[in-house]
Length: 102
Image 1 (cartoon, one colour):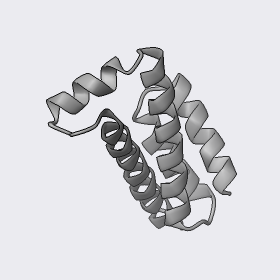
Image 2: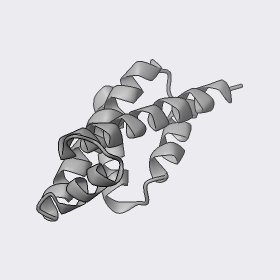
Image 3: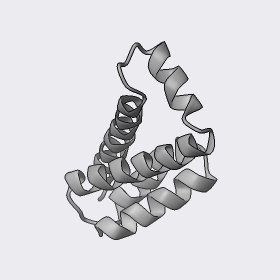
């Protein structure tokens, strides 16, 4: 279950807009039974991997500028904050989808 969510989140994060993670988590919550912490972990890992790859494509320029904008001490901390946002979004949308089950 964790690997399925991780693969779907990685694919959606690469090809779709950022809010597709929420819609996909909502649909997964409606369809499957799982624990929200596993979906949080999958969202966290997927967004951390995507942020790391996309930041590497810009040679670290995006994370440096964004960490300066938010007054963070390290550009890598910005990647962790981004991954936390992804994990929380995935878990909350998953719980919302699971609460919509009949």
